[in-house]
Amino acid sequence: MKQWYCHIGGQRYGPVDEDTLRSWIHEGRVTGEHLVWSDGMPDWTPARNALPHLFQPAPSPPNALMTVPPPDGTNGSMPNKQLMAQAREALAGNWGKAILFFVLSVLFVAAIGIVPWVGLVATLIVAGSVQLGVAVFFLTLARRAKTEYGMLFCGFNVFGKAFGAYLLISLFVQLWSLLLIVPGIIAAIAYSQTFYLLADDTTLGPLEAIRKSKQMMHGFKWKYFCLCLRFTGWVLLCFLTFGIGNLFLTPYMTVSFARFYDDLRPARLASTQIAAAAISPSPQSPPV
Image 1 (tube, rainbow, N blue to C red):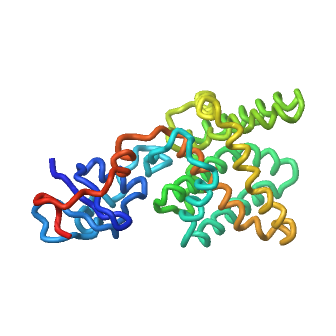
Image 2: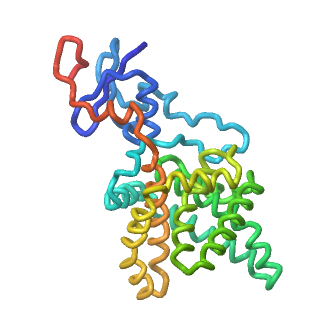
């Protein structure tokens, strides 16, 4: 199998096969501008030119919501501060699009709920699909892939599951809240990964997605709560700007939470390979 080398951050990595390189590209570790080389090539070449097929979006199965596979995680060991820094990096150059998407989602829900009583019922019915669409958009953005405004409506492709998940989560949180506010908060945190899980796997049923969310959050509820607390100062500043600051804060928080979800995943082989030391020069090494 053909082996590849690549330049990342001034260091040289490899040899790796094309499957590993593909995973690095999907995870954002290798971009189209990074230089790559393989045996038989005269010189280093931008990855997008050398491997154009790896940068083409894969055809999506029917009703697929996410076109970008989950990246490597660290089993939840990455500090919240670093997750927030990665969220800012993902938003760099995308703030305008993220803010506009947020505004559109708010306007869409507001337009549905404008009719008294009837609008309230309609809002409750579509809330799950909208929340799933928001999860898809910001999860895609967190994975540094191409986002589209139409993602807001992709949750309607699996309307029944999105509505079921929203209804069950609301019911469970309300029931736990009857035991005082703290159990309700803990329950809401435990179910917080449900819509991300549905975004990645539409074969999951609502109850199964909730159950998987509880499993993922086992041992990480306090860390999630601390991540929420890190935005407390920003929330206070939003009050001083009469809510205008929410245009920036909400995308920032949502991408941070998406990164939290991805980081809960276990690391795969590719993530350990890229951490290897740079290759020493040798007769078989690629040209410098």
